[in-house]
Image (cartoon, rainbow, N blue to C red):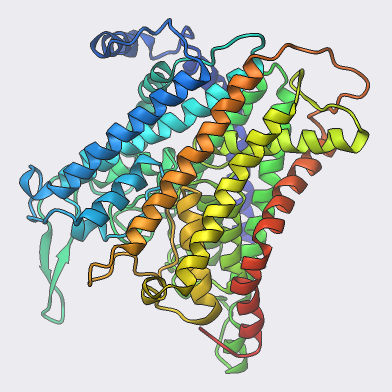
Length: 575
């Protein structure tokens, strides 16, 4: 870790993220206020109004939490079926110069569920499976809509906390339209143009056949890549146009593209903390939430970096030069630090893009992204999902603080009651039970172990990682898992698809119910016993709540996977 350039880049990344947070947060406040003005209004407002007229949406009519939830579920279900049928019949649709066939039923279900839930898990090789039409119409549209829906849910929860004595939390259709038109589309247009300048391809040409120096024929895949990479990162989607994802030179060719792609993953989640502070009229609280996220991010990055820089002790014992640490599965042009940093960022957020293979990380290096996902990916997290996931922990932390002093806890001037705590625990328990239950099943089932390319604790970690990624709506994976086997066994695709749907919607429903509960409460005046949700004490309590809930829930599974593998590796065993 004695790398001055890496330390400088780390400081530069944190500084750039901090500088982006306030201006983007202020812009989000305007976007998520249906009557707020933005500099795009002259161009976009007529399109927005036309969309409402054509869709029959009344932008002035707000919804209860139940109506908001129903709109979200219907919207997501329609999108899921739309994507499923495109993937099944892509061979009969245009923009398929490679004449790629339609997907099997279980792979189409897995992929449709994946993109509808902002997971973007890929049981397929993009360049060998998806037509240009499928990539752009089925998948990229979901990259926008699922990201917009996540931000809308976060806005609805914040509104519910900020409001009082009311039954409405906003309008799902208006929130989704405004986020797409005023935020995601313009940001992605600018970012895509930058990516093209870095060498990322953007065309509709058939794949190119080239003759290598040895005389062999090589197929060079290409297509509309830059436009999809832009929303992949900004919307924390993660699904790569190519199987190698951000390790592929056509998706991530330069150090500058790598740096800005990482920054794009965190930009909106970071800005949403400022939006939180602004809506609650308490920016110190917003910055406290940001500080808790940043603290966990820094610690995770340093642990992963240290583990990868130390390398494999077995190599030391064999006398192999390991001055560069563990370079297995990493691109030379990025190196160890950028690989560890990218892995930490993409699993802190629910992104799933990778520029190195997590399967090749050391056990402790691989434990960091695994644990990041098991926290619910609230360390900045996905667009929207990071904030509403962290607010679950905020409410739980304030509740614990109230128990310590023996009084009814309050958050944002409202009492946290038994109903609210039950909703919080329901959201947390559903995720943990799904991850651990499906991992246990796959670990002992023939179909589960048949998909593994690794044995022992590393194989167990692969299964645990897959379901943590699916339920956490992350989408990254250890490379040692064949989820779409050649024999057509559907178990992995089906169970992972179900896990993604559970992780998205069975968490969202109690969160929106919580928003409705808070919106209906009356304000109570602060007193000497009110726990302040800003400052160093609150930051430590919030971090402790996130870490302890994750540790107490998943520690036994982690002990059987990466922890025991670390000790066995130190004793000279590999898997």
